Image 1 (cartoon, helix red, strand yellow):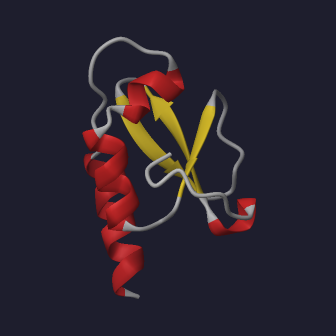
Image 2 (image 1 turned 45 degrees about the vertical axis):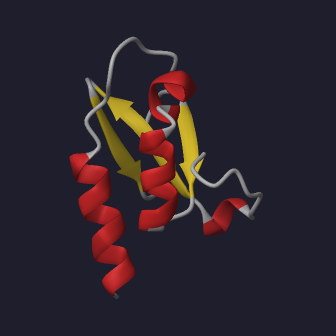
Length: 78
């Protein structure tokens, strides 16, 4: 979604919308439409800048990405 590069599904992070918030779906079992993103801050920043989340989830208005950003930053430090 962010960098638009193809990758194996196992290398990507599935994201779903819970109310007005984008949340990571670690197990891939949360209900609803999912979107995939490389678990990298660069890809997340590109997706936010391009407003890709509202388009991917077909919702009006902005979505909160704070929890998603926290998860991606934490996983990058490990």
